[in-house]
Length: 185
Image (cartoon, rainbow, N blue to C red):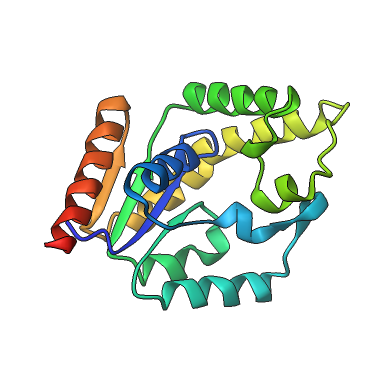
């Protein structure tokens, strides 16, 4: 398997960023987190033109791992990747993990936020439940609609690994580590 240019996609709460952070920590692999690129301080969105330019710049590099969905740039990443990792967790698991992350952020673990928001230290706890409910609805819609679209897009590729459980997760971390070691020989 060639992981030289890898995208990591899946539902919010599926463990994409957790997986990416382990790769970065364990194997010293540079990860581009799309949330870190797209969101600036106070949750301001980058313009789509600027975002597309940044994604095109990244995919033209010799090697990269990109974590995140952002369907608007998916074709750019798909057409330039050597491997696709799809985090395929159940709706319940994604809702649970997203809720857990939101609670951890609420109780002070700001490092779980996109980097620009975390670095700005301007994050304020939301007092309303609107954002939470909208995010949960987004995850549900992802599983009902977006997941089918994603699966249809990636089914034509042969370089796809689907992670459904902890065993798949650990095996993929190990395979990427072995691939990385083989490059150093």
